[in-house]
Length: 259
Image (cartoon, rainbow, N blue to C red):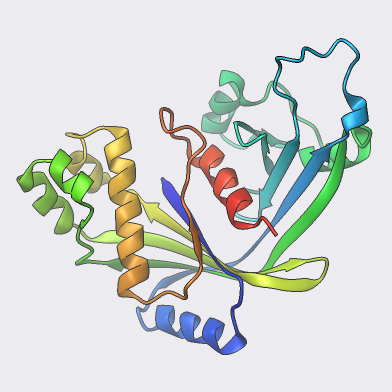
């Protein structure tokens, strides 16, 4: 999956309503309400050990992200370089396999951000807690989202470009009002490109990085074609050599919600 975050900081109530009306006109599949919380911690400089290696990069920032659509899970990122997902409950064999490969070697009844705030407060100080509430989820399928990035067009055969352009694309769009200390800070739109089984066959001829850029280009075309509100679009990834949906998601939230 490929995601992008669009933050509209100066959104007005009528513009938010207009955007929901725009999506409703596409007769989307609705997925109910959702919410999120992003916490940003600063490292306590006095917690640095005496034998600290000056060549070692200090841990300055720790970000945690929890969402209602990933229940019982906390995504954490440190210094915008490394991320893990921890869970207080393993519900499927796929998740168990994911954790056994190194994301987490044990579980706790307490969320990871709760542990940081209550057991590691001498190491990390909470700087900001940003909430997204009153969110709606939509799923829409559109066509005629053509690739227009010259770099992508030059790197792929013409036949493959035509095939990708003629594909119906499905997106999951989540919206939420963001607040910091109770004050409204912006209107957040999370856009997720949903992979289809038939699309996987068509994209087997090019690598993962090319697939990523094609899907980001499709997201940009969706924003342009449907006249999304103007805002800050964040789609950077944590590691271009090893794309990971979970790690990239927390990176994009962290980039978008820097107030």
